[in-house]
Length: 280
Image 1 (tube, helix red, strand yellow):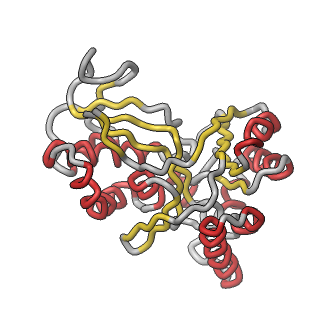
Image 2: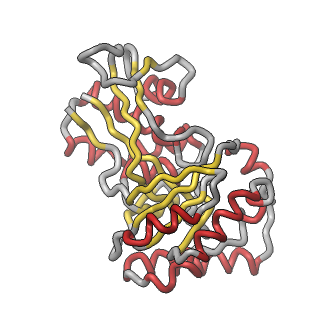
Image 3: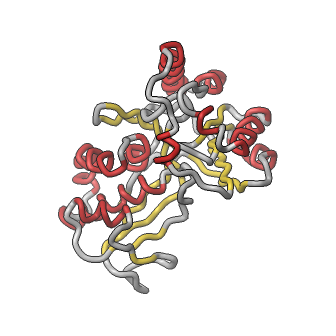
């Protein structure tokens, strides 16, 4: 039995620490030692200090743990959140068995533990629940989606420290900027639910965090601007960056990916709607 957990893109522009999206790029976590039967090719044993193992032990997981993950580390695609969710779900399965209904009923408690370990809920909620998730006050609710976009992720070679990036943000912001972001976060949720593609670009504008972060990642700013000029519905700095998430029509994904700067690589993904799942 293995746990399959999606990567994520957090914030979605204006929804700082409140919105997250699951992506079709998955980490796999399982209890037991790596071996020809116990784990898939490319899996590795997890060290005691790894975030997946810390989460596994936090929920009482026993024995070794293995991990296989193509999610890039330090790029704003929710690696730490995904593997923490994987460790928690693996421990849950170890104690309660692989019943998906039992897991579904346990999601709020798992979210609380994952948020405690991660420090914020947006990434872990998206990896746990899947889809686009709004989260606040310990609750997470999937946003109904009346569109099925492609997600082009532009991933540069350099990394970003989430802790350093968050530390650079101001503790106090002008009222006008707060109102700007509240309005656009509400607009984004409504646009996704209504399938209003024309509103997505405006709905993902931000005044709270992106400019501060992009000042230290100018290639990401350039990629974001190129994506919008190439016809994307919306684009934003994924999490704390430096990856740029681009939402577009599926038929346009290849062309937009080809237009993005050559000093990064692209991943053509979709929204993962399943969240953390159990695989035999």
